[in-house]
Image 1: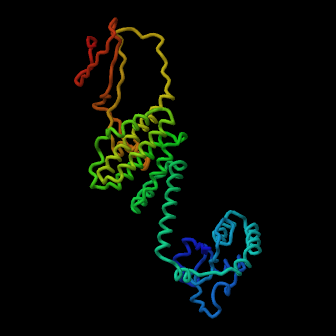
Image 2 (image 1 turned 135 degrees about the horizontal axis):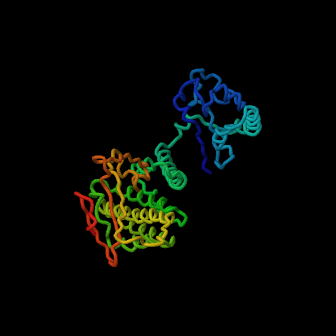
Image 3 (image 1 turned 90 degrees about the vertical axis):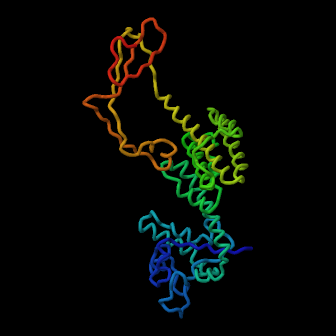
Length: 365
């Protein structure tokens, strides 16, 4: 059977790992030895100079054949979280239990130091494994951010996956967009992210992002996406996934064209999401239409945008938030914008006129 060594340490340990007064799991050596019952002879050879007794030379990591939770292989992982939120007396109890349970088991196990591990490690395999772990981590992180931390940006995850030339995030986006219980704004965000990934892989060779999204192959999926039925949305997302897989191999231009269609799909869901505001609007019919030839007037100040125009609209606001600063102004002391309307007697028609020089007179329709 294969043997494993689970290397565990904290970021704080990395810088002083070649120093005798370094740390392990952010604990100075005297504190660690006191809490665990380990002695210096367990970690370093007795004739080793004090200056060489570092984290890299310490025989800390047991060689095991099993790494399930609670096993010897995960010993230091479990220890790192031991007593984090406990009072000092409770921590002392925990460390006492740890010594009774693990100290002798750890001593009897074959152990390696970081230096020995580096000497035995296959660097190419290790780097490949780290890349796999990074991919799995990005997938989990993307799902968590989309579903449970909707206010946080996903750009750093997308950039890392594209840099590593990986497509795995697209499967996550498909699953989330197709799920019946995914809110419309989250589903729209996932489709917009799919467009970003495709465009990133297409690069500048694929042409402009702006352009038509009316390819006949995509028409049925986009039409089905506009349905209120969750099953239709799922079928549309899966149909788009098939089309995407067919277009991915056709080069940068096809990738950019596919990105445009995913942007169009995101806009369909954004439209549906914003339309839900009608649920909170109540229109009460007028008891009487009011007298004819009676004008109803509305006036408003002019507005200028100082900063952030359109940043509060999807899909920009999904990743960067949105803050718009504007200013309402009177022009020559007046509200320059407005409208007037009146009911025409015995005339079932609409008549629209625009005027910029003077308000309408009583004779205007």
